[in-house]
Amino acid sequence: MLRYPSRHYMKIRILFLVILLAVSAFASRPARAASDLNKELAEMAKKIKLLLDQKGLDAIAVGDFTAPAKLAASAGPAIAKCLAEELKTLGVTVKRRAELEVNGRYQDVDDKDTKLLAVQIKAHIVDHSGDEVLTLEPRAIFNITTIASLTGVTVTMPADGTDAERNEALADALDQPEVHLASTRISAATDSPYAIEIQVKTNEGYRPRAASKDEDGLAFLKIRRSEIYAIKLINDSPHDAAVTVTIDGLNIFAFSENKNYTHYIVPSKQSLLVPGWHRTNQVSDSFQVTEYSKSAVAEALSNSQSVGTITASFAAAWAKDAEPPDDEAPGRKGGRSGDATGKGPPVDFKLVEVVRDVGRLRSSVSVRYNKEEDPKDLPGGKP
Image (cartoon, rainbow, N blue to C red; front, side, top):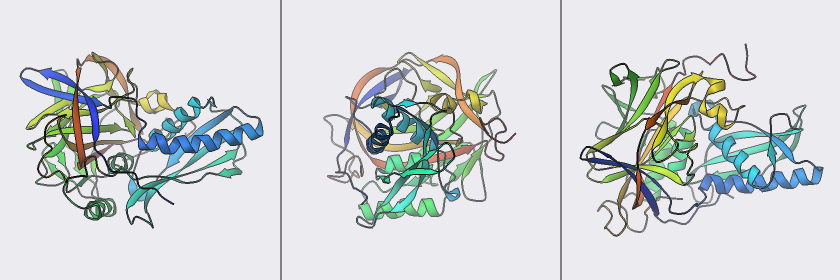
């Protein structure tokens, strides 16, 4: 049975970046609290460890996790990386040439009990011949922000809506994708105050690049190999926004020396240009399109092949002791619980920590990149 977590809003620690008179930031939880994805895959890792112990093995390969074609999703690397990390915490060695491999599939499903949408992760263990050894119990993700990151959905959510209303909006966005493009600005709707813009580095600095809409209603952007880019997070709402950013299925803090960080904070009526993967509070590694085998995804898990989506998910944020926005539903804060991007030259990005509360997901915006043809340099792929 798919489980539904208790509702609460997150108290998170925020990092602030001061640019002239504007303040922009990103955030973390005050303590290392496992995400819902970590929690579900930790349970899966325990089952894998039990099987390995029974067979007298101490290593396993972690293969690809794929999604249905209709999702055009690229979160496989995030799922595989997370599972590998949970296995390592149990003392399991993760290596490509192990006797057994775990791989699987993820997709959107409707929970029969709650009638709510979730992302279900199925996995099975196979031997070196590809014969199935064990099918693992499916795990499910109900948190809307995590669902948005895993599926790459573009959607506007009513912050004060019922669970049923928000669930309907999410399901409709997955079934019939829509995106609004205004010059170089990408948003979920014409009147949405939340948007992103991809800027590519030139000799004159970062310059915006326009996206186009494909036949499925998804935003698409071409970034050439070796180009360095940044992600502009735009918040035109009357409230500060907490933004979760993922690239190729990985949170942009995936390679941070501090594993607690999860969000950026963009103040009301302002924007923030995020230049790269966070490394420390002083330096980030720039986003750079590289051949797949040298990408950040490949570094995280070298046999992952699903790449190509940038997603930003927006929620309202407010000072720890302040009142939440009027339209934040009472008692429902936090919601229901080819080429690839590599790490380019370091870039200065200095930050300090403060505390904020974060509300429910209000908008998620995704753009696919370099998806018109498959990369020709995938490890183990076709020549």
